Image 1 (spheres, rainbow, N blue to C red):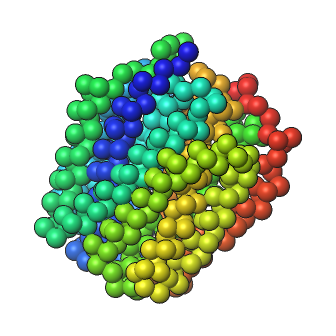
Image 2 (image 1 turned 180 degrees about the horizontal axis):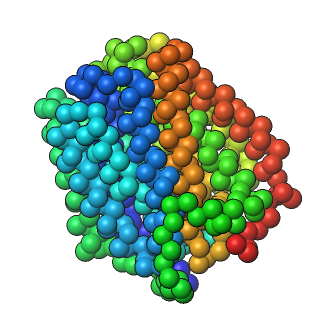
Length: 397
């Protein structure tokens, strides 16, 4: 029997940690632009380095958590994240800010581990609901974090970085005393092999038609949304002339809608619709939201459009990882979910780089239209490929 007693604890841990992360999201691009004079392309690089580190370390930490347990990996990464926020507070150059985001990306490479923790304590039938807990923690972190960050930015950007560090340390202390180990029987056979690119393992996973397709699908979806990671706040600041507080409020609205979807709506539709139709529904909302962002017209219009986008991401972000987990063997949940997070992190590298380039050199609409275009591609691919007869149970890795 799987124990679900740890679910509220992992939820609180992730929520507090993500609230610290959310504080910086709406102000990071404007801080880099206004205070340090960094170009839009440079801002894209700063956003991308965070995800590049996740690309490198998500599979490593996932496999490590299969060997030594989820708890020590989660605790160690929280400490690294707190240090990165302190460095952010004292950043006065492009390279120091870049270094702070590099460390933050290393610390943030624990999402696959958190997903594996959920998989440890839930049955396959309950997994989508369990993964929704991570999505809800993300959503709530993005409700309160950006709002707090927008408010604290009045007192200086350094103060917001220290606030982020304090929230992350609070999450660390809470997890240290409250979070039990979820992995009952760590896989301790052989030596721990730390490889940045374990090509043999990656090939072994991706050749499976079910897992390979789902990971590729998640990659395209994350790339589509990642186009706006660095450019949305810049669009608000430079084109719509929003303040940091208004940008923070928009991110808060996004998180709030995402939470509503993941704690309520996703449960309802999972009982009425097939996984295939749930994915198609989420992609449809993403296409509308991404394509309409540069045409919102004013604060209210942008708020409505970004809410539509949040409905789509709120549906997809727990659904696809839960599908991947369902087809994965129990003793490799951390490794496979970590690989998925790594590949999706690479999408978050490419997305901001292209988004920053497109915004700077082509036009403010193009990061968002690019995302809508690739999401439209995923809609047609999913319509054709996500059929029961094509999805084989993933049993032998």
